[in-house]
Length: 64
Length: 443
Image 1 (cartoon, rainbow over the protein chains, first blue to last red):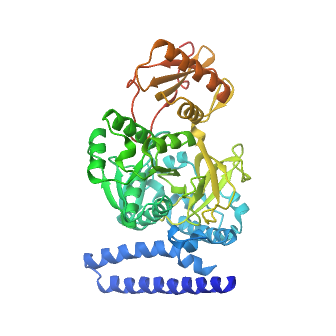
Image 2 (image 1 turned 90 degrees about the vertical axis):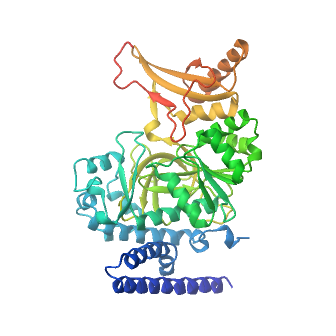
Image 3 (image 1 turned 90 degrees about the horizontal axis):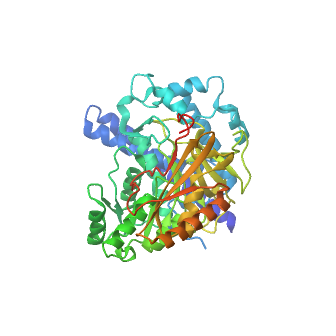
């Protein structure tokens, strides 16, 4: 029972880690597409600041 | 029964300790790599040692400590920006200037990139969530924050939580109290000193602070001994929460709803509590030590093994709240404030504890240490809340003298002053003045 809970939690963490990586990849693509346009570059960079925080709180946990 | 809603991050905050330790060491190696690659200061300081050399906590001892003086020296005339050798990102990425208060010397300039700033704000989200701040709160912050970091962090974290944040900087104390009542503030970010001062001011206005409606308060900027926290809770009828941190490393430990000790914000920080004599071994549960802190995700201002000089007591791990992080049971003050007076080790917090707990008629105080001949003389100025008759004053002073003698092993020269005579502080209070250095003998 306890193992099942832990397995479910790990699966959830890994799913969220995957989504965080996907967001980072998409935002970097967006930043590249919008190169030279402050509205895209600056807002995309801001989003990456939040994924930095999510890597700490979520992605790192999925690796242990 | 653990309720996930009690946690800002239920996974991280309830992780088994061995997992937390594993993540911290992994993050430490990653952060050390970053510091060596991006900070001129750490490129020099950590030359010859590599992240892979750090396999366990014991290996950390092979790395040098960084203290505030190191940071000052690394900024003076170094590098191409005002941040000297300490900047860890491209100068174009710096979005916020902060500086230390300068209490112990020349202030250190601290750069924040937007990314590093969000990392700091996240820590404060944990602090406020643990203190019960929620979307329904209207948070009043009665300060102009200037270049000092704590209330900025609290402001943006409360905003991220979804609270309604009210900066109260441009008002005087009476204006702030009126504004809090007008808008129905439910929570406060405050310094302990100003929290007490506002409560006193509200009473003078004929308002009971309890009726203002503040339900919770997080304190910053000064030590918060248990007696002072109780006094604040009694005055405001609110839950009062402490945290510990600094401009350089960020806030790194805070209270949960149990309000019995502080949780270290693992794995955002790797915290070592080291013996005060040699700073070379970690203390056991229940022992006092100095906190050495490495913030593991701040890129703009890399900091490895920062000697905070905060004197803390290592707590017992595990808390009824369900969090698994390492605990501090008590913050007893700063090593900077520890003084030898007539051969006795003295910390000003011990005076605050006695006055706040046992002498509620005392409103303010100031401690001054001077040399008189070859002897140290310690004077305590005591300000009562209201004018007192000579008999009542004599009884008060005798009582304080006796209790301080027992508590500190020192004899104080106690001087009464009139109500309102001592300065009131909003940010960091300066109630302890050691004037011995530079004072010529005989004065």
